[in-house]
Image: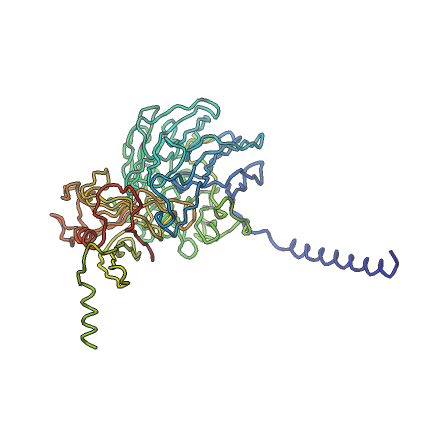
Length: 382
Length: 195
């Protein structure tokens, strides 16, 4: 190469490197995007697990038949596993069109739910239970889940099945339900397993199982808000479709009503209280019409302690306490979901969207959902 | 001109040959307590549409993805069956069963969906002293549901209009499928939900 080429080439390379360096410097000067201080999934990626900043699952956690009645992914109590719901579509089902218009006939297989298990020690990811969805880890490592009588979800066919419990990941499964029905496993309250039974019209009953075949109706037409940290209390909500909306605190062991709050007697902005909240100390965070409602549950009483208004009045799902001063949740958006990060002191909430360039996987948008274990007690809790 | 206008107005209520009608439901979402269920029909090949509408309720929240709480997701639905004396644990009497539907998040699926009221399987009312009887239409809040579309009807304790009865009659008179029970084949009568 001659000097006539070398020098301009060198200058070009030097200018290019300088420009790139400048760009990096500019990008490096920008603050990192905000991220909720919790464990969460974005598409197939799990962020925030202790010791694993970023984890890629084999499939995106989704749970179409349970929504957020149950967490989409749950870490095991010993921190070794992440169990999560997956969904494989067997044929396209366009939500804008009717089944008839798409040639979907009654009984056609549409999708297959599965519970998968990611082993953080070996990085293996495998099917734990095919035809299953919704799970709960008990503090001692037992795992409960719902498994359909058939593997596939079929058009016009109720996806009925049973609830199974394994004393450990590799132990044999034991059926706890005596009659097949539509169940969604919600969580453990101490030794009591809480399970939704879904009836016609999506009516939800909360059942309590004390062992195989030992079923009690804990609350009819109710949603599980949260389980007390010691696992003895269960806070449930009743919506306006069955009477004045109210919260009931029930004893997990026998269903005794310990306290009750008529929600129409508190700040009207609370409106209707939803399910899938969180309980920390004496406080419960629950979805409400205005965002998040914080209740104090203690000394046989349920009292409204405050409200957190979400931006633009959007609803907040699965609110979780993070430390003493923050509550996170999420809301749906066109890009698949955004997190809400609230300061309990100021009452203000901000919208955060970690990995905003994340793309969907396997036909699903890049959903952002928290990863958590609603069962109680957990390690360190009485 | 006035005669033509008058004739056009009459068309809205003119009864053509019922057996030739092609009908479908629409549900316009407005609020959980006050939306509009309509039965629309035509007499093919004429494109002229006829409509009858009733107040309907759906859900207790407006997030169509919230299972057991949100109102019905938007889109087209196939109808899976119709009963006059359905004997469910929560849904009874005159009901229309509609297909499961994926909501706007592209993932969550709403299921167990019906058009129904609060009545017994024998189309009566079971009203006790409880604040809210599930098979008695008592007050406006009975328009709330876990997601289904609900129509009012009269009861011994409240004088709501007989919208369920009217919708049922209209369905059968103007293009609704004559068969009762679960449909073996896809039904041409559908439901369109929108806001």
